[in-house]
Length: 268
View 1 (cartoon, helix red, strand yellow):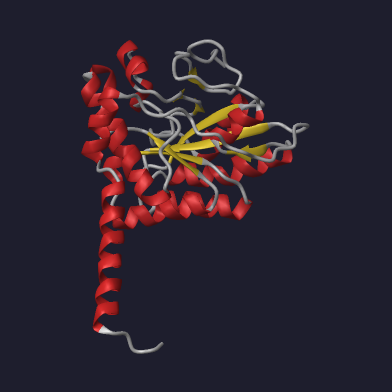
View 2 (view 1 turned 180 degrees about the horizontal axis):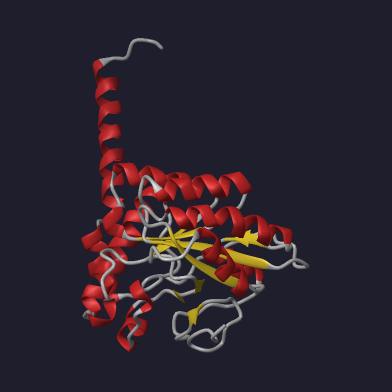
């Protein structure tokens, strides 16, 4: 490169400084997003494209309570082993430099990162402002890593109030689970419980909370068995797109399967 004059160097420095200033001002802080959300609800679910064989059943595997650098990593290893994707409903308070790298890995693998609140508190007892702070700050943490806002919300403890449904402008997700947050039950029992509930278009609710190794082990049963049954693994967004479901945050449905029309799923 030719030697630059002092004026040329000054000009380059000024341009770099302007670019850095612009980048910092374009990205809103969590507090700014929260304030904005009080006046305007969270944006609607973004459009997603996916390639699915419509002649085969589909299912969305989901995990709650991460991210962490132990169990979440082991879950990702299982997903890679079987070449499938999942959706992670993350807790904002669990984010740090190390867990952020885990979230980045999940996103790069094609997984979806969704919202499970900031503090994993019972949000049905909160004010609208407190609810929005929980959701927006978590969504902002995800945005800092993935460049995308969260599309779906799973309420902690599946505790839901009318105010939550009116305030949080994202579709609510539940799922078919096995209470694997409790240490009771073997990996085989957890897998059998999930396999007994599956159906085309279902959302499976599991937990990647730290130390939940039985669920990690259960994936070696769940995933191969579902694959042998012809199931395609998709993210939650892809699930609704594949089923041609138009989502609305005003539906008051706590989705456990794509074609659900009642507030809660039927008992299995």
